[in-house]
Image: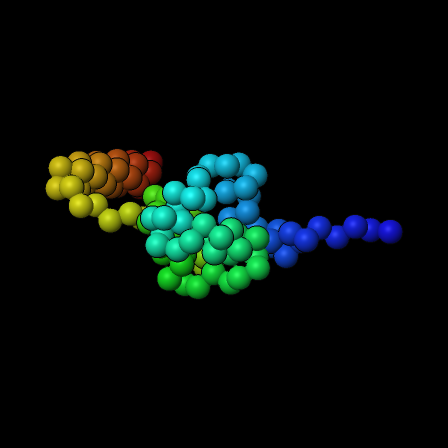
Length: 117
């Protein structure tokens, strides 16, 4: 006789990801995350275990509460999209712009070298 875990449905999909991150890895505190999300600890546990569905707004709140884009990436990656955080610091934005320009110049330089060969 096969014993079916009560958490079987939590092992699939987004709930499976949440179950793995919160329960198995213990990467984030459920209590702290629930408080930051503005919901009860019990409610968040029920969503993680698959007893209640995650709403789209919950995923945004979960990402903001943990600071981890893995929850949004779960939906973006299969569609061919990548999550890029917004840069609010002007110094960081300037640095990344310079890195981008350097990368493009290196890429263009390599293409020009290939054309000459």
